[in-house]
Image (cartoon, rainbow, N blue to C red; front, side, top):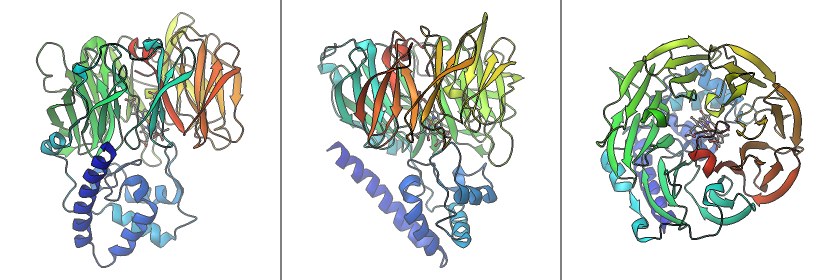
Length: 505
Ligand code: DHE
């Protein structure tokens, strides 16, 4: 029933927009449109509004020059799922596709407050359900595992490594799920804009709402009262109450300029959400302190827009990176959230994936270690003076780095390296030396999360007939393997709620 409703809503939207698009096509456009439907639509959406891949509309291509778009279609894009088409498409076809994606859709795909409200589905009245787990396991050592292969989530008992439950989700969840402070509810965000609230204790879907057409991520306030979504399309930040009822939307604008929203995170000690804009150099802080609904964003002016960011442990600073759009250089900066200004450059090369970084103590100093989507390198930065302590070479560029307070080791993948995607590298946090490697020859091995006690590291064998592999975090030996359908991320409730230094928040 839920899937049927979803299909009807998207199909109606697709049909409406599709007819409008067909009517506006120029005589030469049908070929490009057919190419798009054949090669691009499954990831970027039939209406170019984005799905697994980003939206391909003039509104979302502000920072990408046509020459770079052409190169991306031909050669693929590092650090994404975008393949190279130069072997299967002629230069003329690539040119036609490039021109197509810079053509506006008419009418411009819109998703208004009325659309948001109309999309909301109440599946269950959670107030009528028991306020305690209806299964036997440590509710704080629960793992939520997103299986991207067939769009399901598995709930795993983190002591016995046994599945408690498995349920279907929206298409293409992205980013970490977020939790209510008591750990009862989890909120998932999908790339195509849906937020789903799920009752972990009663194993029931509670409510869903579509916040936008192409969404980046969601955050939940540390007091559990607010849920917020960052959108690429439309250019907006959307705030809901904990039941996913719309409270307010903020158009992501600065003067006449409109912007995609890169990401939003909860800054618990500040009682605020921090929002990065992708196309204009502003960082927003939305305070939820006090009883009333959050106030208008406080705007911090930057020199460069941010694609990705990370907080220092005190949440005083945001460490942000701008990824190069063409052959340019990435930049990274430190923003003092109290002072409301940039205070330092970060000496990180390549394409840092700061959001996947971790912090730990190294020789009496607090450091940040961040993977790099372009190079096989982990940058370790001293958080007191923003200087590089060391750059650790890894077998190739990777997405995720994870550790835990109770283990001396940090684990990192190199899933973007064709020849090294099959291994995880283990780094000793005391020496910053590589000490071990685990491998699944020829397969993709990625994304690690620890049990609440830090004794086991769980990794994804990222294949359709993949598995979740449990390693002993001290000996690096496999202790268990559970078959799963392309497991993507896995999230330990305790580590998330306590904001463990070794994982994302
Ligand atoms: Fe992610 C988290 C951005 C591509 C899997 N990714 C995030 C977050 C951001 C981000 C901002 C933090 C959100 C949060 O947790 O609230 N990701 C981006 C990109 O800009 C990038 C490079 C391009 C894009 O396609 O958007 C990108 N990401 C990918 C992938 O291709 C991955 C590997 C596969 C996929 O499913 O899309 C991928 N991203 C993930 C995962 C997390 C994530 C599993 C959560 C990690 C965690 O442990 O919290």
